[in-house]
Image 1: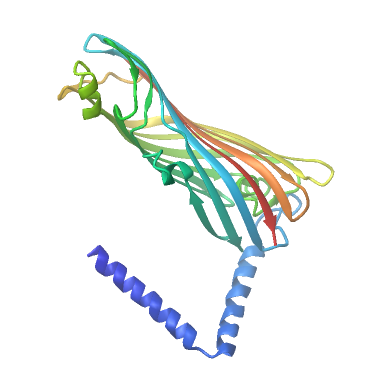
Image 2 (image 1 turned 90 degrees about the horizontal axis):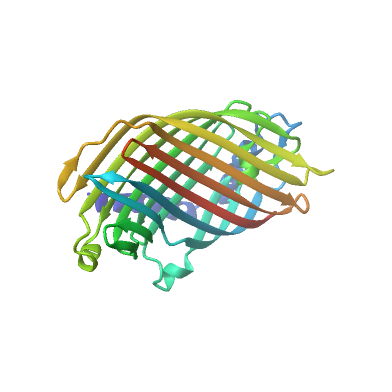
Length: 337
């Protein structure tokens, strides 16, 4: 059914392209000019206070970047009278990407050199959107590269392929002072922050995931228990963000924002050797979202910078404490045309 729908969609696209190609050159130019005018009007139409935030005069943006992500997990506690401690991390994912924007319509292409060589088997998908009032981050990760120190019976180290982890995270933010404070200026560079401004934020966070032992671990350590953990959390909270526009021409932009959320709903399940274990009530259950950015404008057309986004989770009951940290760092240069 999905294949049929895809074929129909592709057929419609090809029909449109054929009809467009069969148009007279004058008609094509007229249609292209109308589309360009609509995109330009949409691009320059803004509800920002132009004393604080403005659009670049150039509509094209080219931005190559270097990106790296990673995840760490720290856990300790007692389950069924057995004490254990874990200090684990995934293999870092490094990608090189090229982004091309025209009037806020962006196309990006990225490559992972390690995956191309067969040295990286995890899968990760990251998506972020920054608008005038609303921003959100979406992240999905599937990993078997978790490794590190572990204290569980006779096991003191965990190699790759011992645990299988899947996580999904969605965080959304609302910006109250959206006329003077711009997330896109710090993270997309399709706006320019001319004067310093800050804003209170309100946010919603959803996380879900699972961790389970693999057959590879049982083969290496037959005494290791068969563990399967699933969790889902919904949190709401508030925070603050600030953009510092520094320099005589506001050529420097520094951004910091912090948004903690308190989990108002959670659904956790723990199975050990096929037996479901009861979970005690959480004493502390929070998710923190932090952002930082620095951008330097060499001129109105060229710039360079770096961004950092972090997501930290703390889950604490009387038996088990879990701390998960996910980060994404990016360094970039850009030119406006």
